Image (cartoon, rainbow over all chains, first blue to last red; front, side, top):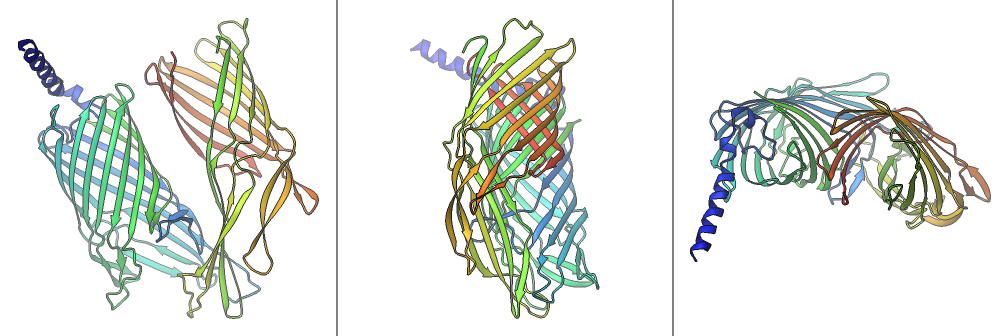
Amino acid sequence: MNRILLTIMLLALAGMCIAQVADGLTPLQRKQLTVLAEPATLYKGFLRVGYEIKYSRPGRTFDKNGVSRPQEDFTYSGSYVDHLLSLSYGLSDRLQLSVVLPYVNDNLRAVVEINQSGNQLTTPKIDITSKGFGDLQTEMRFQIIKETTKVPSLVAGLGVWLPTGNNERTISTDAITNDVTYKDITGGVGSSVIATVQLRKIMYPYLLAAEFNYFFGAEGEIIENGASIDVLGANSAIWQLTTGMHLNEWITLTGKLFYQRLSFDSEVEPNTTVPLFDNSKKELLTLDPTLTFQFGRIRSQQVIAIPLYGKNSTAELEYSASLQYTF
Amino acid sequence: VTEHLQTRFVLKRTAEIITEPAFFDGFGTEFYIINNSQQKIGWEDPEFWIDFRLPFTGARTDVVLNMGSTLPFMKSGADQPSVRIAPSDIVFEGGIEFERISTLEYQNTGKGVTQFAYGIQLKHRFKHFAINAQSAYYLPLGTATADRWVLSSSGFDYTRESYTRQVPDLLTIAAGIEVQVKPWLNLALEGLAARSRNGWNEVEGEKILVPTAILAQASFSYDIIASKRLWIGQSLQVTIEAKDVYAPVLLTTSVKYNLFL
């Protein structure tokens, strides 16, 4: 009996030692931890800067019944590109402050070919461009429970998106060709708030995490050709379930299921409260495989968001690549 | 199988969606907009290969002869297209409304015929780099019979029509240089070319030739030995020249797991 008790105690001691491995690391070694091995928030005094590019194209969409179809009415071409500059700082071993500044560069062209013989309408060609800095995203994350060998980490976060983007839209029509040009907004409608709860457990070389975000979208206004248009807030709930594994000491592969449900998002008919578009059933489920390399203090990451299911949302792939450095 | 003999089994899944330009038409007060798309989604015919590495070529040189076949396990031809007719959301100036007519054609992924394939791979290692070249040729054995769907002139009814076709042959050639910059990291630059010709489709008793397709691409890739069993690779493939073939930019990621060491 004593032997059994001793064995159990030794096993428990070994577990505690493994839990304290990260605590026994030098600061440089901590800065070199992979995305799966590091704590849920940055260590005190650590500063991480990052750049990310996101790319997608117009094409297929999920309709209101959840069926994936090519976009209709027009032939769409162009690209949606977002550049994101990020900065994260560990205020303490439990508290992290993050700031993300997006630069939007979206170009969309919609064209329809016309049989000139049968009607008197001219070719409708629409160019929509959004270019400039978007809304500044700030967030504080706090580790309520620090991870041990038995207990997962529990993190709560609160973020505010500040309306630093451009909320002015200009629409012009060419008098001869009837082509329409939109210079669209990059944000700036109002302040949004995002609340986060995350559970995360490292079982080296594996990781399991679940995260829930609720986004209280900004209500505000868009200035269209000098006139004000009201915008209803877009509240959305986001669930994320992540599993990951180390392929070796510095390469990790993760798979994330991302589900977003947008409760409302629309501009309002002038002088009314009637929404122009009803996206109240907007949903999107994606699988996001991610490959991450940790070269010392440099981290590179690639993600492909594969749409699996949705309603009133895109059905196109989104590719993103990022580089981070921890000071 | 032995030091000089290897077998390969290849199964590819394809997802190809082509959207034609939207087309607007109308007569009198009736206007409509037509959206045509084709999609080809599914597993391609499986490929079986035997690779024979020639002995007596020295430690620096590899010469591998390949012989294989694709088998017509997957469905070929087309399935019945779907048509949707609904009012469009868009209203033109003056309150002109119109209907949206959307057709979606479903192309199957099988060839409908067995193909014989053979090829050669060459590799020579220098002190700091290696050069490689490879070629493969796919030859269809006979003609195939497939279904297509013909639109009636009176409306959006489709009738099935069986037709004979000759699947085009395919020749691929690639050559490149690779450098092992670290014991676990390999970088490669490669030129790729493909030509597909001699195909035809039977239309009203006539053999209508499929245009010869030509594709020239450049590829940059890396391979990492993540562990003894796991290899990771990525390549970026861009098109230099293409004729009668879709030629998108390709970003490929591969994860290889070696079961037997």
